[in-house]
Length: 159
Image (tube, rainbow, N blue to C red; front, side):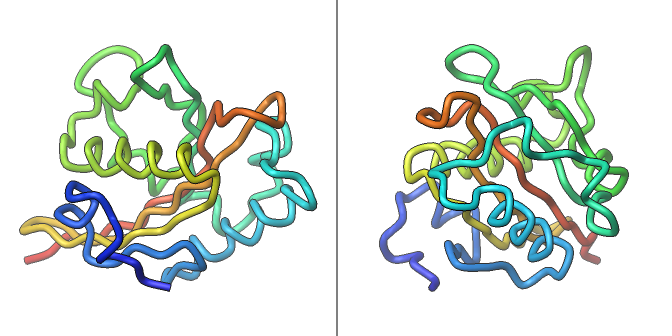
């Protein structure tokens, strides 16, 4: 279900497609299926449920960010294909230190939306230098609050 008309302005400006039901990228669809399996009948899967050793062929595109203070997220894990897009300008990798400011802005908005709605979401983006898709799915340690995000990113350089 694409719901761009119902989204806040910043989400409409940064994404060309926004979907709560699935993704168009095979590796992100596999990551979403893994999240759903780990969730089971609970509201959120726990951070401990996401074992990167179980991720198999889609592991290169996934990431896990944990809440870092009130306004930031720290990278806990990134697969090999996701790392170049999540490279920090300096020091620890948080959304506020990512070298790619456009990706940081997109991730921040998606993480906020996933936290607010409590649902997994995927969104496609197109910019002059790159296009791709991002998945963001909420995780919790206490089962009540979103304290981490499991997701993935697939990016293509554009000419």
